[in-house]
Length: 269
Image 1: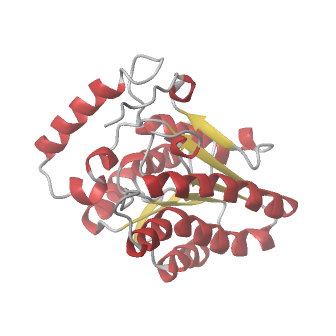
Image 2: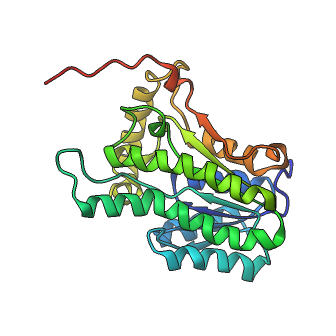
Image 3: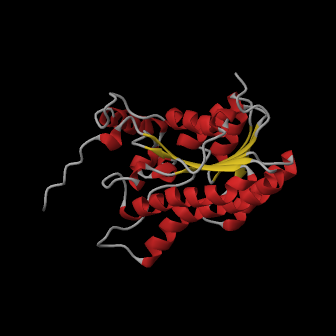
């Protein structure tokens, strides 16, 4: 351990699996005290136990404002401050151009964009009086080009990128940095329905799906391997650490070069 986050108090939403769980492990290894949040109580409690005394689990559904507020309240009550908020939670959207309903829109935007809006709101309320803080939002390369995510997912992630810039300009004078990370094709269960779907499958079924996905994604970027959750975790570590102290309003693309590939128009049906 090099202690790059020694003593830092952090919250990671969507912290029970995938990118969130990997980031919790990296942050804890680097000395942070971590609150991991998610809807899977069994997985969250087990992960917190594995990662040690500096990691605690709090049940949270990021589509509920009161749950996000409760996370920040817990950090202040238990540790007296909040140094880093990673608004990581997300999942698949609902609806296509042909099928989308207002219910689909409300659900997708609340999960993918609304959770970031509220995460920033409650984190900033604590960080402003401190005069310091770091907020990281999980965006996506779907914010930058087509064909990388669902219809509403892409729109919501574009919103996350611009929201990051607006929040960073408004919170910068308080010494609060706001950045986002745009993962490329990272091998996580979101490709087969997200953590909710993965939780219904056996470990063997999930591993088979992951192995197949890894082989497929290795052919989808200039670098000949799939992106891993740890790749995003280490990007978050850099942004949260003192090494990233002059980075603000930035969307850090971590995609192995995928967004630089030529995009071919799909054939017309």
